Image (tube, rainbow, N blue to C red; front, side, top):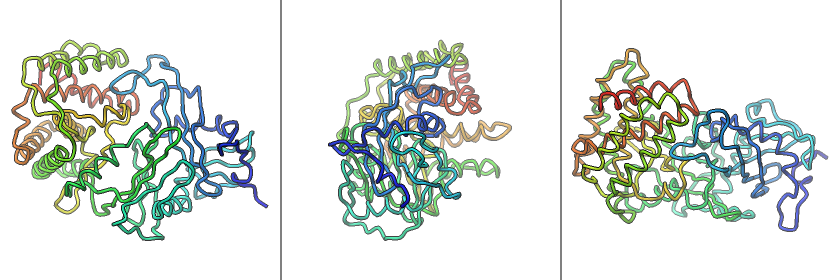
Length: 461
């Protein structure tokens, strides 16, 4: 009879695998830092702790694992917006069996050499169509499995037998598409609380906002803390993301201002719906905002030496906040808005991925912020797109900026272009975040935000 994980796992009185990490620790220390969604790629994994184990079905384990890492390796680069975290919690779905089919070669984690899984092959179960189908079945039939809770909107029918495929695009989570009808985002980095990518689309659906696909089903855990683990939403099969569309327009030499204007209107629609769905915040205190931005700048400069010569000039953008009006009231926002977070289907723009910046604490991402932060993120994204072509076309980015802000003003009732000091400060803060991100994840892309840093610091743009 073939060995299975279910048959071999020793269990303690509370149903948790007693020494599973004896089998997995060595494999995960090597595998985790190679994953796109793992936050600490620049540091080795020094500590691993199993927080929760649930057998979803024979041969598939659901784990929550805590990772600990040293604070610095060499020069070190902190998580965007703050110091390096002491540790993180990650969600893993692991397949365990005697052999791995050749078609699942990319999913391989390794073969356990000791412990209860000794001799068995361990792999990422999200690559396995069988596992993906069974996960959808759990969502189609709400219920509980150990600490896991599977829930759904009873008004939406999800058909059985939808063929799954794992999206290959680089992202901070993992996404499965089912039959081009639904998409399941499986969160990798888990924090206590309701993930805004479930909370916000659900609230916007209640407002009748058609710019955001509404949640259809979701799953969460109650152990070791309450947290959202994944969300199923309608998939837009004929949609293209804004980044792809912008690069296509640049490559063809086409204007993008019409699309940018409509995207500005869509952003304002979402902001207005968010303002109605969630309690408003007070006006941001410019002094506190400037201090936080300056703190992030100083932390970034300590970790990215190329940034240091520009620090005095960048600080002027933040000091300018002290003498300008506070702008629109703080409210719930997207939190990480850029061209990759919007989809165009037909003539309509849709906004997705309300998780915010995953590196920031969940309490911060769920708080109120100035809507100017979202606007600044999109304006920086136009600059990113323009710099993908040689020679650089700054006029393309400028025209998109103007059109986007004009579209936003048409809907929102106020014009971002009339808040120049506020907008410049948030764009500068975003560029500093981008420098940290690229230094950590994509060093080849670092010249893109550094070009903006030099322009802002030297010319005061």
